Image 1: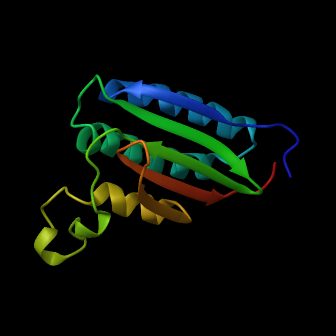
Image 2: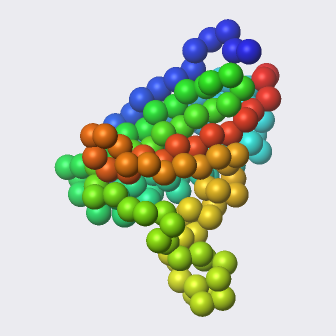
Length: 142
């Protein structure tokens, strides 16, 4: 489907300002793939949430810990993996932000956004430690 290989790996320190670097590289790559602007925006928001969660919750904003971002295309699907180096977590234990009792709590909104914006979202423990979230989105060829 795609004649060129579009992939990248980034390792950033756990600082919120480093999220912008991920966004620039991601958007340039999606644009080079010919992904429509609205779809780029949805992918961008989901990845921003995943990286922010890795920085804040996974690595507890420890700048000595890294957040690893891998991007690739498998068939007609964009696959993005975001991994932290923290203690890990159980996404099922995060409260549903749509539950009436959670209305005023900010917890869980990032997970909700990722699930709504992407076709598939999975969390797993990484063999090297930390949690890895894998985001998948089918895209139309340019």
